[in-house]
Image 1 (cartoon, rainbow, N blue to C red):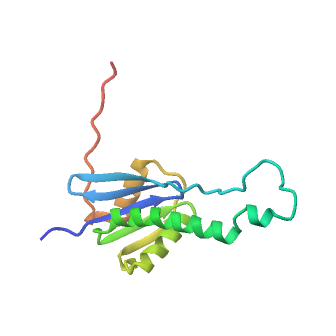
Image 2 (image 1 turned 90 degrees about the horizontal axis):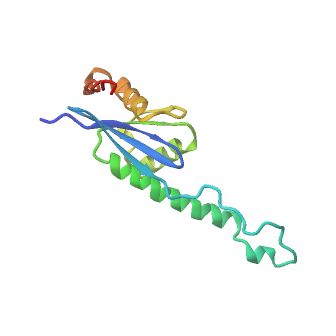
Image 3 (image 1 turned 180 degrees about the vertical axis):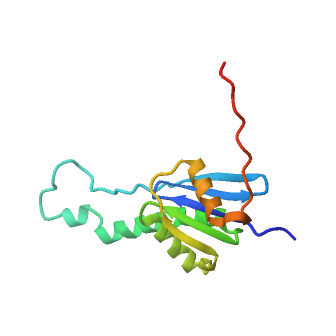
Length: 150
């Protein structure tokens, strides 16, 4: 019988680093968001005249478009995590909560082991945090080979 797959993800609105704990250590995957966070009105001066509402999309329609784009991103992250039995969600801001909401909507939230706020982290720090969370049941990474100076 194979061990259930475990891992985690550090996510913000720009990128996600998915970590899978493996018998040989850990495998990481980077998923880039294609979302432009700040959709702004065009032009560098205020529009004149009464036609402005017709020239600029309403804030709610821009927000709906942004939400739809983020959902595509979150669904790509969930696809990378789909076969994991347990998942640790990490990140500095709203993205981890929004990802969790997508897990709930897809009825996959039972796989969420924990949600933790973590600011910027390097890939090795993310791997170490995921391994620390899952403890002794997590496979250990091999020590990196030391390079001698040339």
